Image 1 (cartoon, rainbow, N blue to C red):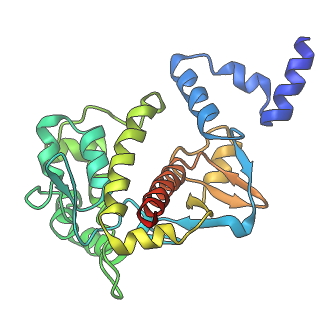
Image 2 (cartoon, one colour):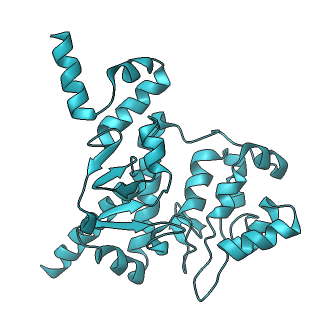
Length: 260
């Protein structure tokens, strides 16, 4: 019976049982629960190439990225944020006394133009970051890079920002999902153009692009937020894509209700 269970486990997940048994800490248990609830296969799931739509700060639909600077800030609990990344890093990673730094429009780190000079202290680096992440060719800046950089422990210390979490913890999955669901719904329901862009993706599988997702997945460390489609497989947990698809479904339902 033991041997039969091992064979079945390999057939279902494609992961060596010995690797699974080595994860015996409480933290790894949280990771395993995460994998079970968000992946058909811990490393990958089969999809159709024509049914995939990438998005992200550097590939596919840029506007779907959490880094994308919104025309009109999202408003949650009376506070404004210029990107969904600002909201998430503010509420999840930062202690309450430092959260005002990310709130639009007066927080030091609330915009790209004002914040980049704080998170980067050398003029040459500011210019490089501005060229890569700033507005160009009529496109809006990817302002979410500012809070993403700011919550680095060493940089946060230099900026005087107090952190309550050092990293994204898979054990906080429910909280992470809750925060992003609120932010993403506010983003897409509050902007008619973005709403249409999301709804128009139809039933495609949305994947936040990650070039290294296959390598990480095969090493037993599939990325939490992102993924990569390759040879009929989607590597990575792609949590952000899954959350976006949930928002899309909610918007579809709202549109259907209005038609009735």
